[in-house]
Image (tube, rainbow, N blue to C red; front, side, top):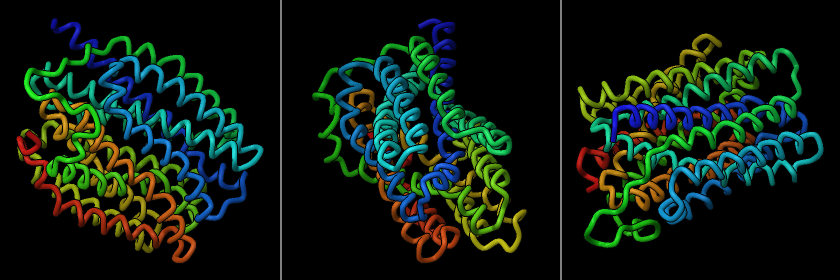
Length: 386
């Protein structure tokens, strides 16, 4: 493998992560407007978002065998087109009724799940060829995309650009660009000699893989709660203007991006377990500050610490699961499936709690999740997944 081909594959994979983040944040930056167009309560919004989570979990269960059979390049390309179809359907459907939004979110969620497993698997292939950890920086690419999507969303909200126009353009960009990025991927590695590789369901019987999955679940619930509810909580709970609420979301994402970009250096210097435990404590403090802050500037500071705390849980979990190339597709699929259960359970849980306690107070759950993550971080110790 030449340095030029490795460099090109790294750029292509980074771009695929970034495009995923851009599309994701573009949708969630407009959630308050979609809620208002449909007249949804917090509980109703949580149940509507559940459609996307259900699509993701269904796709993730099947993603290991699909990626092993068709390769990460093809799966990312097809998933990006399906994501665009789902995003456009949800955006236009919000002008009509809840049902087309639910259908669009389900398609979008299924595409996201397959896309996620495939590009993470490509990231582990890159790590093995480069001989160094870069997964957190690839996820920083996702976060760069989310920051860009959130900032553009804030500007378009301030300019009163319709949701359907904004998300329709994003859908066209995703469908047009991502398949081109995927052409630069490295070939997926064949399974090594030895026992038959677990491409899907066999990895569910491995205790270590399940522990890694539970760790990722705690971090993903904390991250997903920020993605889904920070804007709503800032606007409804802290009485922020809609554009300021979207900027709080952008601050959360920017902090997560910075943490992911610095991740390889931190992990090399201090090791996985101390870094992950330190970030979990940081996230706990940030989430509590966001919820209980007496003034909006302190709440924004809490959003920053919350975002920093979530930075490395998911990418390091993916790297730990993929430590053995022969079993990487199945284990990454299992860990991603468990992690994405956060997106299945999180929106309705927090939405229903929000109906009773307000959305802002319901986010105390996030601090609890960070506390749980500190006790599970030992499962990601280097070499454990082998």
